[in-house]
Image (cartoon, rainbow, N blue to C red; front, side, top):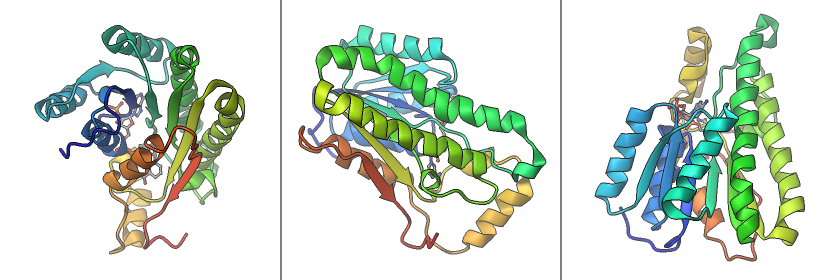
Amino acid sequence: MSAGTRLAGQVAVVTGASAGIGAAVARALAAESARVALAARREDRLQALAAELEGDGAEALAVRTDVARRDEVERLVDAVLERWGRLDVVVANAGIMPVSPVTELRVDDWTRMVDVNVKGVLHTVGAALPPMLEAGRGHLVTIGSLAGRRPFPGGTVYSATKFAVRALVWGLHLELGAVHGIRVTDVQPGFVATELLDTVPDPDLRRAWLENWGERRPLQPEDVARAVIFAVTAPEHVAVNEVLVRPLDQPT
Ligand code: NDP
């Protein structure tokens, strides 16, 4: 771990920290000396990451959390406040992408995406806001998507959830920025090499996506983490509200 200190003294929460982008963001925050709470459903993975961060000299806390459940997200924030007494940065990253053509009417998948990608973010914002409002500062980061700027065939509902996140962050800036000193950022990645494709229910669709991608270079989770660090280490008067990060090789 490189020993940055730009977030020394600060406390961060990362949802979806058991894999992919969330794990990379947690590592990057810890590498800037933040104390980091790790949230997701797979506790064994959270514990392993917490042990890794602590082994590198950071302070970490693993809290099993299903973001679709408001009570669990509130318990997460309570645990963080109890442990460290403050909350500076929240990265609402947890998300799923069980995409399929709308004609297949996988309505259960649609509602699951709303539950995790939209309600999960709302639960996270709702739980994080009280301590931030009290402190008169804080930074809420969402991991939206390029799909929050343009839908793609098969990804209609997923895209709708990410449009919702983008609108939410835009509105949060208007309500929280100047008046309450709280910054918001929606980081919008293009294709990132993670386990997210595993949430696509149709193996043929998964295979077709990867074949179509071919030899092109996707983003790595660390590339997205770098964008998060850029936003949260900007000078206090700077609100980096949106960051669109595509692979150079992604033409769409
Ligand atoms: P991964 O599948 O690798 O990681 C997803 C993370 O979300 C896991 O840690 C998972 O943990 C967590 N998660 C899923 N459901 C829940 C839940 N109900 N409660 C708590 N945590 C949950 O995917 P990525 O890292 O790629 O995805 C992270 C974010 O980035 C998502 O919001 C995704 O939409 C977004 N994104 C990804 C892109 C990509 O190409 N990969 C592109 C653009 C955006 P667990 O299963 O342990 O709960």
